[in-house]
Length: 153
Image (cartoon, rainbow, N blue to C red; front, side, top):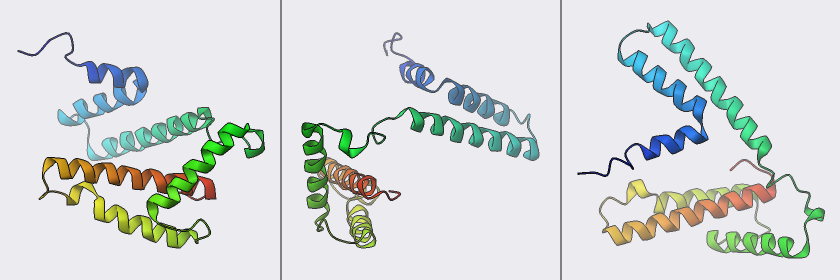
């Protein structure tokens, strides 16, 4: 029998982080499931939910100060850490640091398609975990390079 103290813990944690999204999502799910809404009202509620989600994402982005520090304001250790992370990202993707963004994106997409977890159905569990780790490293490397170059990942 499951421990009832931990029952619903994931929902509780999600509610603490994103209370409005969880409440609106649950409310919409229940009301649509009961057939209360017509298609027009459901579409309007979905639209307002997407607008709210975009607003919350924008607020979270404003509060994330990771990329807002000018490069000159970082101390030597932080600059060195970012430089090493960027060099590692280029190494993971197997591209030169002077490559064009489109060439890097093409290599990233090719590698991501090769190691994507959805394509790893026939592998053993250990091989699948290794492929998922490789996929995450590839994705993280691309995001690091894209952030450094100022392009959308």
